[in-house]
Length: 239
Image (cartoon, rainbow, N blue to C red; front, side):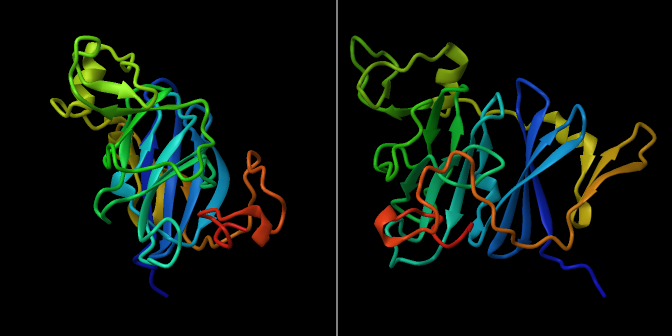
């Protein structure tokens, strides 16, 4: 029996500590999320999502506490449209904030700090949930005397960014890929550490895993996803 060619791992590293997130693509429309403590190699299983996650448009906050991910759903008959960007607490997909994309390719974003983030769909996207009180969104606006960068919070105040963060937010510089990836191998859905002699040390094999119903501990909705809960992007997809 051959390995399923769709099994794939994407790694996201926190820049301030040893935490990381593992995004598992088990099938085209089945993804799993896992937290990984690289200091101890402890991996915590999280939620599964029965939709297509765009791994190239995902990001992890510097402290590893928030995960920004993008989904292509392809269904126009649901409130979020065919594509959206969401923010969650790994290893869970349950959205704290969700932004329908104006166009299917205008998804994704980046963290400018542990508290501040920016979306690719800059001004147009609106938050359908508004539950992430810990974070603030940065948008581009007009340059003025009180805001020489044009980068503001949604309340109109200038965004509290340092020089490097401003350069990143304005797209003048890009964040260099982390060198941590050079220490690991993800071939065929198995996570290995690369030793100094080039040999591989297995950390965990993710092949053969499948959907499990897991509820995020911060999900305050009533059990059962009833019609009285109001629409949520993960209704029927993670439970």
